[in-house]
Image (cartoon, rainbow, N blue to C red):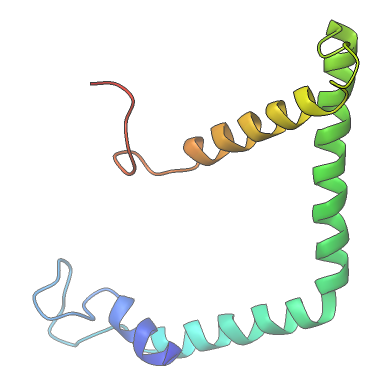
Length: 112
C-alpha cells in the first residue's frame, strides 16, 4: 500500500496533475516511501524507550518551569489551589502550541 501511495503522491502520479509529465510518475517514488517507512519502523522498534523518556522529560520540564513561574508570581497561593493554576497554564500552553502548528487557512479562525 505504501508503494501505491508513494507513486500517487509523486509529481505526475495523478492524471492531469500540475507538473505531470508524459513519462508518468517519477521512478522509485513508491520504493522511496517504502524504504522511509521501514527505516522509521526500525528506529521506533530500537529507540521507543528513549523517545518515551525524552517525551516525558520534556513534559515534566515544561510543568516545572510553569510551576516556578506561578510560584514566583504568587499565583494560586491559596489553600487547596496548589496545582489548579499549573494545570490551567499547561492546558493553555498546549492549546496555543497546537493552534500555531496549523497551516495557514486551516481550522477555525477567531477573527471575523
